[in-house]
View 1 (tube, helix red, strand yellow):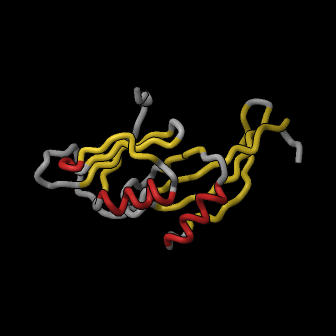
View 2 (cartoon, helix red, strand yellow):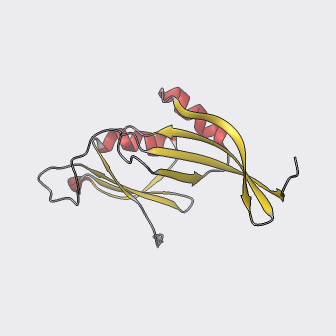
View 3 (cartoon, one colour):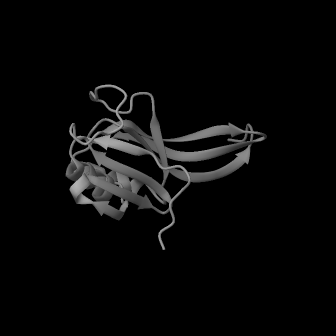
Length: 143
């Protein structure tokens, strides 16, 4: 049986098919289930989960203000992947430019630093998605 995470963002999208092409074909997510009649899809990538719902002015959706692109201002979704290079290659073939180029970053965490190779891309509606390949940990100050 499919296991749903305890926190799953639901993103409003303008065109579900365009969003599925990005999230599934480029990022590598799988459609866990879909309700085409509602313009809805629940996606999963090794436990990273997101729901997509196509905007429908007649559906009584939970919108707190009119939507204007880019959607999701002020949020970025970090998603762990096995290898960022493979994802970047698929995105390049599909014509998606990177929002922020790939780089290795080390973040302080207690007495350690956690490393990740990361880049940021925008989905078709402008949501920022940060793809991360884990590089491990090292003592603070070690280069």
